[in-house]
Image (cartoon, helix red, strand yellow):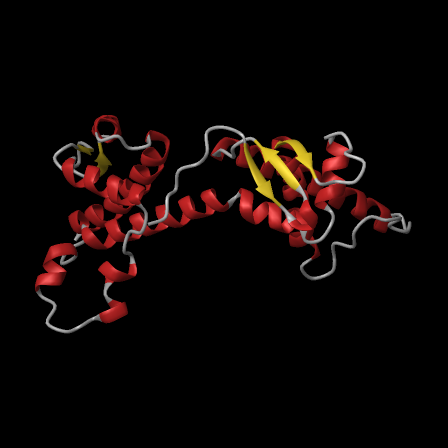
Length: 241
């Protein structure tokens, strides 16, 4: 069974060409910060390209962002370098053992496929967490809707196979199953609006239950919020109906 748990201490990643880097763990906040910085740099480059074109000047090394896919590719390149600069602390396997500086890190990340490999390995846990949040939200949206969940399965006389929503949105990781069990336990702790619409389970209570059961609270919090969103969509649809 896969785990969504991120390392809490610096760890090593092995990259192509015998390069090894020591990185600090990625967090949702640090990913958001790197994305924002890469976006600002891209917008700055777009402004420079636009000004040069309007003035009839050559681009002089600036990327031609009018080409299809060029903008997306450049953003990915900038994001990889932002993450590497922010998180790489040490490295080995590089000729002359250069100092770990933003300029040197960016140069190493420009070597294909070092940057792409680094990005895939470094962001793997966050990708898995994003997929897990989508799964548990979709499962809740089906499970709590009218005729969903147990009612759906009780009335099913056919072998649905892969088309079965329970199978389609099946939870994979241990953390997802923990969050699901907490959600089931806390169904009696719903928060409601005065008009009777569901606002989801009481997250504070749910996290106390998760903590008591030894769950990773940072992961549980994100999964429970995603699950709550699916529950809200299903239950409010039911109330409106």
